[in-house]
Amino acid sequence: MPSLAQPVTVQNLIVDDGTAETSVGDGGQFMWFNRFTPPPADYPLEVTDVEVMFGATLVNVGDPVDIYFFEDTDGDGDPGTGVVLLDMISETVQFNDQLTFSSYELAIPVFYSTPGDVLIGVVNRAGSEGFNDFPAAIDQGASQVRSWAATWLAGDVPATPTFPADEQWGTIDSFGLPGNWMVRATYNENIPVELVSFNGVLDGTELSLTWATASETNNAGFEVQVDRGAGYEVLGFVDGHGTTTEAQLYTFGVTNLTPGTHSFRLKQIDYDGAFEYFGGVEVSIETPGQFVLLPTYPNPFNPEATIRFAVRDASPVSVTVHDVLGRQVATIYQGTPEANQTMSFRLDGSSLTSGTYVVRLAGSNGTMASQRITLLK
Image (cartoon, rainbow, N blue to C red; front, top):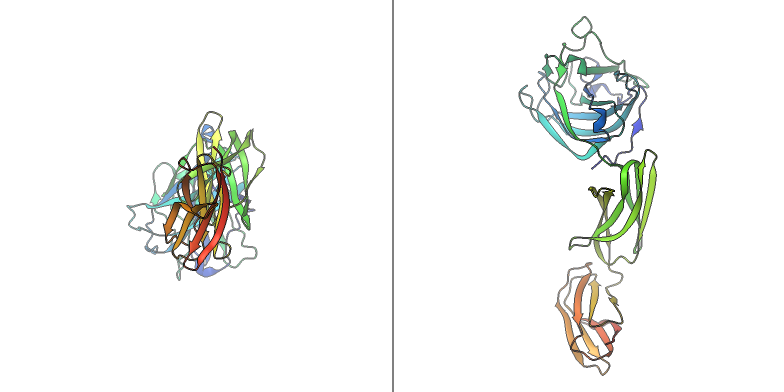
């Protein structure tokens, strides 16, 4: 699933928090990161996980680290210009034996829309007195041109880094040895839609769903689905905009939500039938008053109808059906239902004659609600 974080343009990579104790290095702060250049045909893509091999002397298991994801959009191969910060995750060091990668799977993959460089940076937030070394281990093989560093003095206002820290690795005033930092990642290629938000606003029993895309590729549209506890079902379909690099906003309204928990997701469908799910909106509806007998549907019915009810507090209730003379003709439910959950049952009227009937919801204190229904054969 593409990142739901809204991309933010960063001038000069100003990401310092201004405090010396969150530094890696002697009195300053550094970000060590690798530059990757996926084939242009793989775009748009989403980074799904990242791995870092920690091995420095003063980087300990359990130390907090921040992992930043940048996109270099100008194509000049210099991460000091044209850089966009897409997302950041906070993690901890899992291993520091210079042999084992600490692996971090992204709960929300990071989306890259434009061919160019993928930059993944690592900042050690543990802090220590004196030189704290760089957090990632070094591969002194052939891929040395893929590693970069940014540095700035903690407390600068603004904390503008000098970038890169030293282009001549291994020389005087260098902040590291010549080599390639042990940072790597994997990604999914040719992601069709960049979803940047999916939200819901609840007003009583009505929900307004909104979602936005930053770009779309062959997008036929979105199927809106809801899970009320028995699996997802389709509510409707919203047409997409095909292929576009312009931002798009979508809305979908849901009315008459019943008591209980409702989980919503989108099924984005391509013109060729390929699809992807986007989730993230969940709402809970409480029972109004102590009980509610929801409208039976269909009404009139023949020969079956669905009867629904909900109670605020879990207590014994019964739901029965009576004819116009008051005689009970069916028992729909008898027991203790779960609080604030819509209970749904089927009424089979195949053995009943046409006419008007009354559905009664009763508890320990007698009848709490009733409703007339009509059977037409």
